[in-house]
Length: 153
Image 1 (cartoon, rainbow, N blue to C red):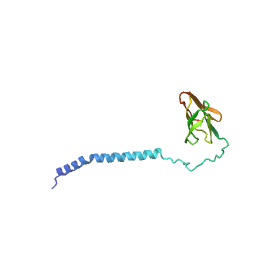
Image 2: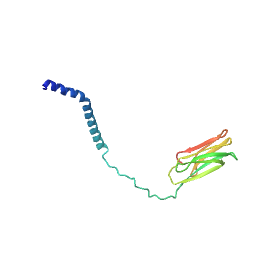
Image 3: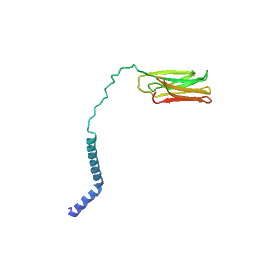
Image 4: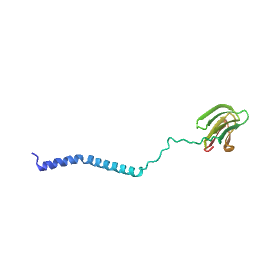
């Protein structure tokens, strides 16, 4: 038969083995409750969603015109890379200089980027947005390389 000392000793042995898991369960429960309460306090307001809304501005009367220009010595041939209005890269190989392209966009701003490497010792580039020169660079080196970049064409 079990004596009271044996019962007490068996209970203490079980508690000695199970106290760490019991403490972990209590800590996780308290932490979960705290997170639930904090999320209820700070994230409780439902904000309206505008996911399906579209702009009703159909006025395309004021497009932005961005012009990339590459210039150099007469007869220079260059390989040119540029970014269009949608951000897609384009490559033109073997273009004779001067070279230019005009991009028309209805976006309020456009990042402009053009670069070129020619077969002569002089090459230059220019980015013009609505008649205003945004960036212009020239270089004089063997197989000259130049780039122009603007964040707000």
